[in-house]
Length: 481
Image (tube, rainbow, N blue to C red; front, side):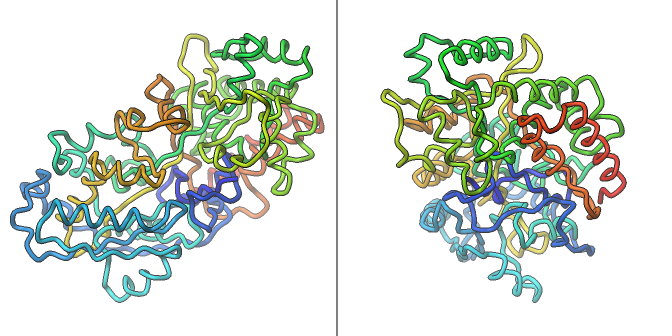
């Protein structure tokens, strides 16, 4: 399973929510740490820090994007997490940036425990100019700087030309990845502080070969899903399975956004009074309740850290059709046996309301500039360079995929299938629960996601589940930071 600590998108300025679904275990494209739920962690600390300097680049060559003729003898300090993508890509990025910006020397720091390496220097006033380190990590460094107002606004970077290209950063980024709570962490502040980096869409995986063999169409609505489930049941095949209940985070988020739209979704994420009792939320609870009736019978018994691969194996063995997961699934099951003619299929979660598009929740990583960075203009130039075709190609060689328009056209094989999901019309969904102060014995993760096992087993009713989620929401609303 995948640890999503690098790509969890949080709805509040200090969110360290554990979005355990779409994986909650190991992953070669994430770090070795694991995020914790916002109301279960105390990693972050609050103070005030200087945020001035964001306006100094207006009118500068770098703010226009690309003219670095006066960049001689600049040293740019770049700190990046060494995740499962490896360190080599950052070395190549540094070399390519230096080549395109004569006179600039990139001083690169890459480490699996980046916080340990740079925190001491930062406390002494020696800050990196650019940091690639996402929210949701155990150390909570990004959250700490965010809460201390220690990040430089990146809004003007969006209007910069991508170095070497005649297009702005905003025009390069896939629609939906900006102006989200995962990039604009301060409610009421329209400024962007986190630049979206490597992303991983989630959806439903299946054996496309099985559907071809049986002559079954890929369902695009839930009515079509239920019809397919009935056909499959007649042949001893379940419609659905899941690795663990943790995978219901991305799945549920996609359903919520589909059911009520982005405003409704954000109200759910911020615990608005009565939101979980609304008709839109009721549709989602009832839909998952019905899906439980189509879930493969051994799923609950294996929905744990020890048995989750047995559930994933069900779709490879044609014992179940659909399984919610993320793009790491293919690598995770690369050596597993599979039915003859097996072929990976991937689709968005069907729309809750008829006539609308399917949805896919995505996790992405983040890059930011400390407010006390010494070389802010060149740091912004470096951030803008992250969205260049040149940089994207270097990253893609390590399977780190940037959220830029048309990226799927440059990919091959399974990656092309997975990363074209938004190009093919799926609605992108991002953002998780708002951060709260700890409330003893209260966990939205456990109540909303872990309860699914009890729904599938029949130990709890959908109505009991929905009421419990509303009760937890009430308790967390007053504890929001």
